[in-house]
Length: 110
Image (cartoon, rainbow, N blue to C red):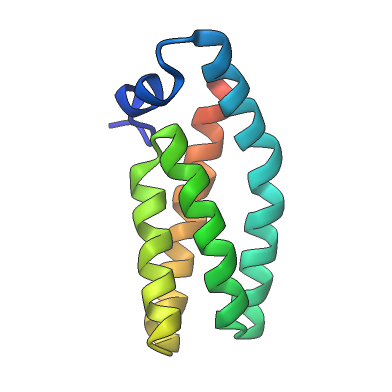
């Protein structure tokens, strides 16, 4: 199974392939910076900042159909708000892996 739900992406783009490519291109160029900031915040134990970056990543990921990544972002937000460091660190690792896969899939489509 892929990391992007193309039915969701098609719904967001209204079937407009040029708009879909624009969405994917914007995602590919903006998300690495957000991920870097999120990972740094997590490494520093700054869960407030990590939660803010996860929230941003969640919305962008949902818009392109990266549902699993968006769900991991929500879980990270929840763990960070609950001040559960161990759970948050575990989720960050899963998020790191999934985001790498999503970005590779996006790159193959643009």
